Image (cartoon, rainbow, N blue to C red; front, side, top):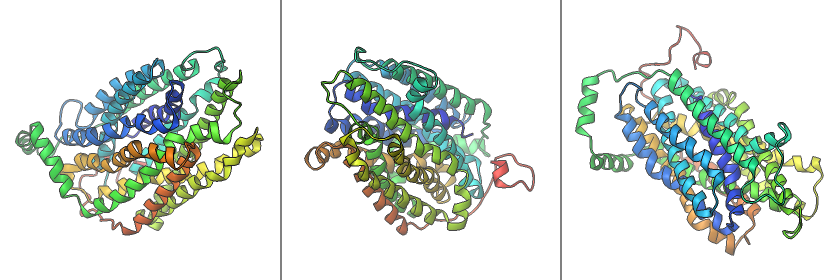
Length: 455
């Protein structure tokens, strides 16, 4: 059921680790990068609630959520293949919009699918398994250029290579294949169940059809959000401000602020910049690797500490990891010893612990407070508080970078840690609601099976 997330995150991982690099190769300056990332949050802001609303009202031969998986996979795969062949900045921006639109169409119904098919008791492991596959997919996405060069012997770019390196193009091609295959696996292997009362479902669908009614219900649902959702919204807002700063600037910061880089006029500048970029992607892959492993333990910790305090704890750990990166700033003054370079793993371990919680705990807390007939819609609305902070960062953080942070990517990452710490503090205001009923345990299981085995 969750396996498709591996492919989706493979594509996201390639984007996160390489888009700022691709933009810089096509001529973008650091203070312009935030606005160029606007595609991801802007498409998510509008697409996920609409897709959630539509999937709540869909039933066909493929089911309720799976038709949207398929549409997103087809167009997302095409965008990933074309992305590294961009020859101008505007072309890369358009393809990023297409890619993010497609990924959002695939991604939103996945979270609703888990809420559809598992009971409240199974939600910790159901959403944690999404984190497991997200972690694995991100590892592959972040490290693919390094894997191709160091394991499969693909030649690195030279000073004579023009445009986006061949190794980056090959990485995106592999990622596109992984995206399509993984999502298709979920489509083929996962069974969805029709509404219990099909006549009532068709009547509701007929009564609420039309774009005007759709937007009306979305806005009405926003006005009447459950109390727990409103409280979690602020946590998500600051958490994702922090994450977006990290996503935009981490690999660029490692390549230019932490690792040794010769002057731009040097003949080996481009080669070393690519090597630094690959090493930044390798270090960046530590956090999803930690997430990949830690997601298996997270449900047990949440059972001991509760979901609320588990999330608060690990957000605090992640914030400390991002802020600590400022200690590595002076390493850029000269070549760095390999053993010192790998100390960067420590902050990334902290981020990995936080990331596992971010992917699971808010959704496990949220799902219990939602009406069953609006799970898809509210999961999409909840995405507002992931996308809105990214839009704020995209539109405003470039000005902060230019006027206060001196266009220094590493300081941008550290600011992300401050935002995440605020999110951790806001968890104190969240009051989780236990689901009133645990009807229709739709995951097939033998009587007496434990949650871990059945999930």
